[in-house]
Length: 427
Image 1 (cartoon, rainbow, N blue to C red):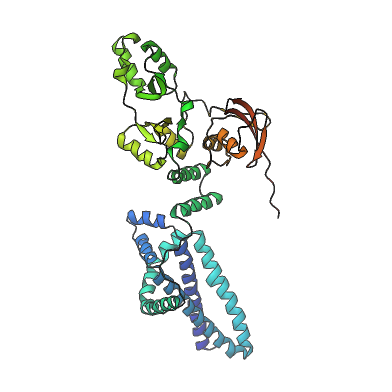
Image 2: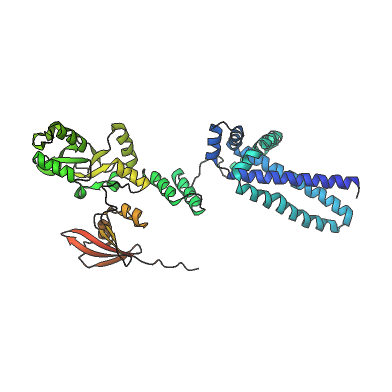
């Protein structure tokens, strides 16, 4: 072997190392977390700032990586072919093709890209500065290539730079979290909480409110002693007061205000002026998005509102806790009953009160019953049956069997729900 052969082999090795660098860098930068880099840059990491600067000019970066990678691969292949031709004659062409293909694929493509995909953020921070030099070196050539490519794409009718996203930003976020959950990087609770935050914009108050049939209210004309007893027996801290009929809400009574007044009269409830303790009711439309109501709670600094329909009729009430439960799941305290109206049976079925909201049942049982057409489980059965079923009737839909246990007039008051085994998908 001559000195020129050794020099050629050394250059081939250097070119292969540069090829591995360009391949690994491309994978690391495209797979790196933009949010992580933004956070690192905010904390003063200069290398993260360099990564963000490179990613902000993605076309220039990709052009540099492709140009550099192809340049060193072609150079390595040409030099290796020359050396092997000198050693083996015409057969050296075949040897060069086989050897360089194997070497390039293994050591310059698969190996560096596999390493980069397993630690993209760390490797992106390492290669950022060398890539800045490469972008500056190949910059003029890449600019010319970009101009030619843009002209060719425009010529064939493809407009460069147009936003053609298939999914919305929210759906992309949801998909990314689901993927990380399947890979084990995000726990189920965290995934559900993130999904709850994204769902707030899609929900309206009628989806999360406590229906008027489940509201605890007090007749403002009752004796003060009776009102005090009702408040003490109630598990809530705010009670709507009505006059003449339960839909005519005239005020909201807070337990703390009542206790202060009771203390001021030395425990003599008959001396309390209930009307003076009432706060004015706050009415909100049932069609208001939950995310807007959350902002309204923060502005008014009150966690309680009455929900009305388009005719001003009270449909229910909503609290800050109801909205937070859409994000974090059920919030229970020492006075709450764990998911009232849901009773699991030994055979695997579940007895459910008809007024139980579908979303709450899904959250507790881990089911996926649809809640687009109905809010309560009874409403879902009526919607699917297209009638008001009789006691004892059974229905099967959404992979569940529903049996009507009790009915009061036109209301289904109790159901038994049996999950059915899911059919196996054909291989």
